[in-house]
Image 1 (cartoon, helix red, strand yellow):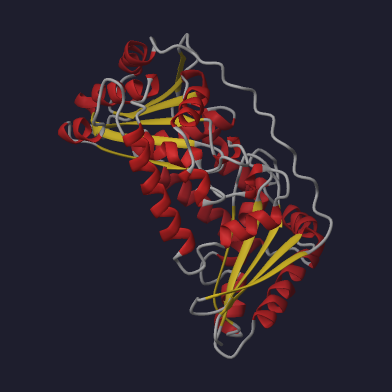
Image 2 (spheres, rainbow, N blue to C red):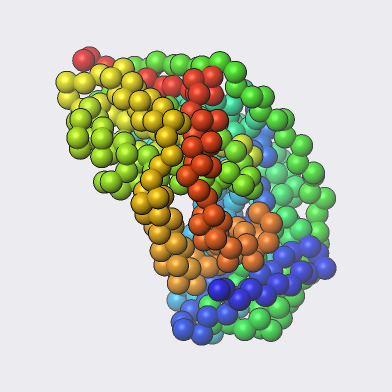
Length: 413
């Protein structure tokens, strides 16, 4: 059981805390409630661009990284469609350096054309490297645009197209920052060898003077229910063919989320999972296969990936996968199979929350979802899923009218 303390500043910043005296380190995790879904369809990639801009220096501190390194710490960040997350670790006796740096760049970045041009180029190169020049790199663009027709999940975090980043102006970037990077749109999680009293004192000292901002109420278009099967075929210079099948699923807060998460593991997590055991090991129709869920705040996707083995086709792999999906719809899984997946979740949860930085990340995330205390209830929620719920979710999800299929074919075969 993780003991959680909470404090809210007058400017709206929520602080969640857990003390761990078994380490000499401390961690700060600052979660901003802004992601790719908050972008305009004609100005995508801004949340990810800010992940880079936030390291470009603030008005008072031109270099973010050096003070962290001199204090013996490390830092990084990541962005997805829902949130932007910054984290750092420092020796506990130097943790005030982290409060100083994070609060200063929340107060105001150093907006200048040179910094913007540098970071735009970094993001553009990342776009090219990961999504244009890497085998299968454009699959997230293809799948999302096929699955989502009105919701902003229709583009990945990197952005819809390079021109949206290349054409971003200094005024547009400033507006995005002062709209979303606000204390009343953020959660600060503090963990490690630091007391709650010291955490509150440092949070008030460094973050307290930052004014709250007028964060707009999110009004996103609701994705209509898919009612017909969608298929796309592309040809690319890749080594082998690949098959992508994705289905609409519930959002992260829905009670069925845990059944969907377990369903993806039943399909393709570990050698004994159904698709790997039957399609890869026994029948050797596929050389590899995987399944995962997005777990997003709005309705997400369950995706299955497979690469046919030599001598087999995408169509064979697709038929074999549907056979396994139909079996999950028709028959309850065994207690042994269900218990195996539940045990894996429980062990992962225990090991994940041993590390103070992981705890900081999880506290901020669960506080954003509802309340940080829900972290302590995750194992129970997985434990309560039964075979009947798995079967019902499979029946509701694995329908051709709820399915988007991408046939990704290699050139010159």
